[in-house]
Length: 114
Image 1 (cartoon, helix red, strand yellow):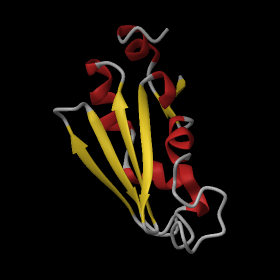
Image 2: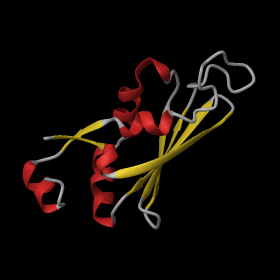
Image 3: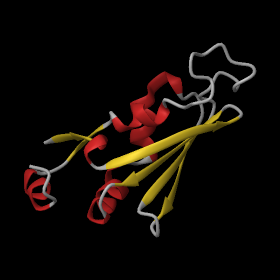
Image 4: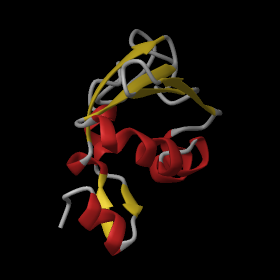
């Protein structure tokens, strides 16, 4: 089955120049291994498509049950240079929570997601 990250995590985002920073935090400890497995640099880059022109970096924070992503070259030059509606990346967290991941029905049931 497909499930939106919104069911598994909450997120915060912001910016540093032309790089958006998105933190994804598991809603429950048992969701963290699923985030580790499914929310990869490649899948995040694919999810954002042409918005992210540079690389995507992922950092794991197991003590917080969180992942942090840097989306390079995603803000049209940054807050003072960009004509983008969200030049400071505040909505990137909401956009990432709309990403869908594949999960087996049995795993979803075991995690209480069905």
